[in-house]
Image 1 (tube, helix red, strand yellow):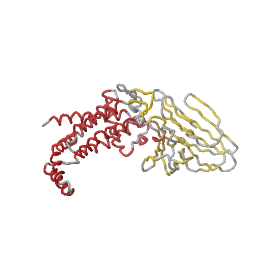
Image 2 (cartoon, helix red, strand yellow):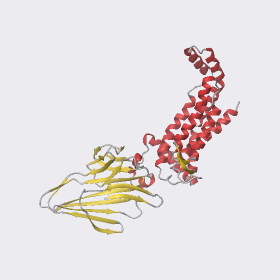
Image 3 (cartoon, helix red, strand yellow):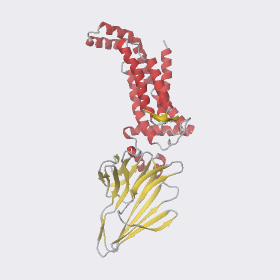
Image 4 (cartoon, one colour):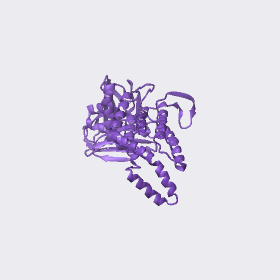
Length: 424
């Protein structure tokens, strides 16, 4: 079986399978022969002979596995071949465990499943497993009987296939062939091998948006040949698409600022009658055609884009190791420099982008804040400090490519906020 797949040539990744493509457990196979692109193994006892041959072409992510089982006995032999795709380490010490899932396709649809739950499915065409960047997919030449996920321990799961049961007459043999992909989760590569397998590249709830953003990002990269600049152009493009709503949001916030003295006057006038106060404030909003919730809409529309881009960037092989300015890897925090001692919540790395983003967010809140007095003013002041700090901490360990996107978007909004505020 294949214990581990090591990817080189700049990819520098290990995909542990532990017992990958094991067909018969606890049998003492011996190497039969080896060539420059194949290796075969043989097992034989008084009842059967099994020959396994791995065909591994040079410079290809696709290998083939052929298995022959022959009945050497004088009686019928019942066989139900099993192929183990691999065993997954689900323990907390495995940094890849949060990214691992199982992918399978049958006649009706493809689906992604948790590796931590037992599962079986009949009539499976192909099955795969993946970690953050790489994957393994196997497809029998004849449709398998079933696929399974089996919990071996609380921290380990096995994934595999069972082929249909056959009875071999004395001297008869049966063969099974499998086509296997071992490579990066990269759309162009997998699509060139088998388009159906591209469904293994999945980004969760907002998969469609993530796929679209990656396509756009790839297009911008083809123009500028740098992933950092491509992310900046993508951020600019998203900002321009949402600009009408952003403009409406900023104007609404400015109108709220202008109405604040009148609202404060109403609060003083009806401080003992909350129902009357709320009614008067709503009438004031209606009179001046101000929507107090109008400022939330652009942010709400940004959220699916943000979550989709997070999944896309954190799983993108292309961004792994991509450099931009001082950033060594756009799929990891920007790590401007490292401290000798550890800072609570932040670790020992100083990441500049989240700090700049938090500062920009603080400035934007200050200049867009409605004028208030008393308790409302204190609440606004506290929020203008707490929110940037909270977002800075949340973003601190996120991929620098994602923080770069959000920082550019925030900078564009801040620049336009200054322009709106300068208008009388």
